[in-house]
Length: 125
Image (cartoon, rainbow, N blue to C red; front, side, top):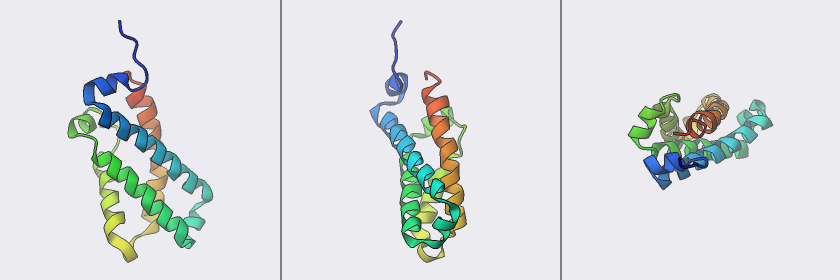
């Protein structure tokens, strides 16, 4: 029986690009965690923090959008369409962006990270 490392079975089934996007998502979710650790009031009052949050949320959504529908259907434990959709909001709302929504997305990123690490990579898929 073949001994798989983390992501090897996923790589075999979905290809290198999907595994790479999942690793990207884990990294971006870690960045989101750092922004959350800085606090909500910092996000709501400091434009640099807001731009950083926009970039991180955008990267999470962009990476998720590159996961094939087949993968997203097989791992339906996350609201992939919402994750992808918030990127569109962040990228196109500009001055009317609600940073409370951005905060919610940043907080949710930790659950996404855990899901990928535990349920996707941990499943031995």
